[in-house]
Image 1: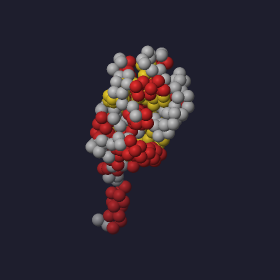
Image 2 (image 1 turned 60 degrees about the vertical axis):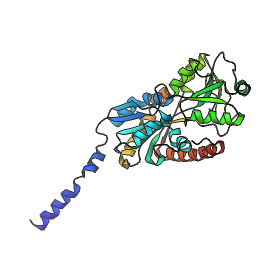
Image 3 (image 1 turned 45 degrees about the vertical axis):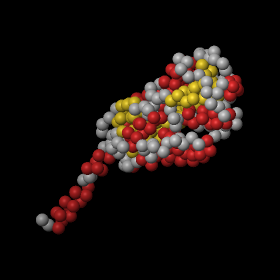
Image 4 (image 1 turned 120 degrees about the vertical axis):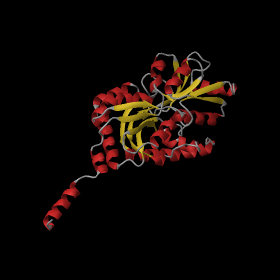
Length: 321
């Protein structure tokens, strides 16, 4: 074989993509599994179902939703963290799984470093609510009743380590309230519990309970919203002096840390395209949430800052387990 032919063959071989490179360039080539960390009926579940059709269209493959609720979102995050880092298993979660849970649970089966963010796509304010017709109808009456009746109240939340849990624990500590915590698998079950009278108070994202607030069946005692919400008459936690208890629920997507950059970029681009769709924005805001896109780097910076703030409060209130 002449030197010229050898050189030509070498150039051809160099031009052929490696198997890994070809796989990445063809991504996605099959359906993607989006693992929802919370129970149906909550804001995370609602938000991903709103954007699912448009996100699937942007990716060019089916977006299959799988619920894996439990342990405040830890079950799903651990499952995704340990899955193959190829972009075909994506966690659909909220900020507490990356900021609050790591601060309060020494036995957490995953580390934040095990996952990398694709981006943030929606935000939901939080609230402390009570069923109408109970012994209190305002935040001040709730505090007074709890003080006079230690150990008689119980509150529901989507689980230890969630934003709802965190905010109520701060209120409890501030006033020295003795209120038992009853964890549920998500905001949907919390709504059912408060409506059924199984708990007297609940911490929850507001979007799942807006309908019963507007109907008058549930009373919002206080919210984390920085501005008034249509149909929700309640003071904000910041107004009452709880500057640290203002965390809201940020809906986010994550993949295993070792996922190739090209795959992460493709997922992020699809999410950005989805969240720039006016129809998607309108549909998200119709639920009572805000459509808000942030890419992976912006999401990581926000989580890092939140984790530092949370760690200070957890240490101050001794919430770590």
